[in-house]
Length: 338
Image (tube, rainbow, N blue to C red; front, side):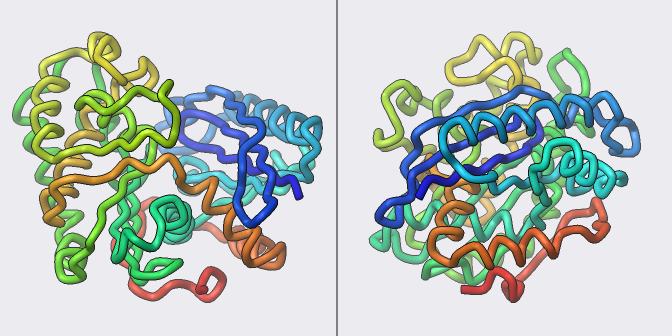
């Protein structure tokens, strides 16, 4: 069986085509289209008509690519930028009618659960009780669990791009006062979630997302060219030192640092502050960097639970949502409970 998944994120549209023999999604082709969607929204968070046109082109190209590689219609979803847009329903309708791709949005809690599943499968049962951190453009997902799916998830409005726009919108290095203000915001938002994680006492911490991958590389982890099976980790102490380095540089010069790409250089400081604060408040000293995340989680859940599961998810996400994020969630929703 050959499957495909399309992920519309804050920066890119990503496609993964994978073979699912033996219950493991083995990638045969990947592609991405750079849109920087989070930078194209208006002051109210609406996705502009021009951005919708570019998004339609990217999703159509992803669907056509998946077909050329012999995969059925992709499992397509959009994350925070589309999910929180006031014109979200119009955007989804436009993509569906103009491309034929049945795209949906995923609640932040579901993103966390699926990312946790991907990380659990990659890390294995030997990881024991597991805490997951995932920094996206618009939100931070935290999850904890002892089994296949998490016992606890939270989605918080602490995405690297969101906070950069609010605190550091500009080229010049930010003042120490702004960095301190951001850290205070993150501590306040994470306080209750961090207390729950400390109480649970995870054995293993794992981080996903390009933000964590790039920060780990900046702190000395192996480069991506050495492949996904090279162990990588990120120490809290090293990350604290990187915050000072990033804060002293304008965004354009951060892109010259190891691991920091030009498109993400501007938001790297906010991502570092969120990551370090999350690790400190939860008592995590070192986190493993996991190459599997939400896209692999979607594929795994589809393989294990079948098409009906995805239909339930897709049909249950067409209602308006607020842009405030989800501060805390303990029980998993029925549509994703294992």
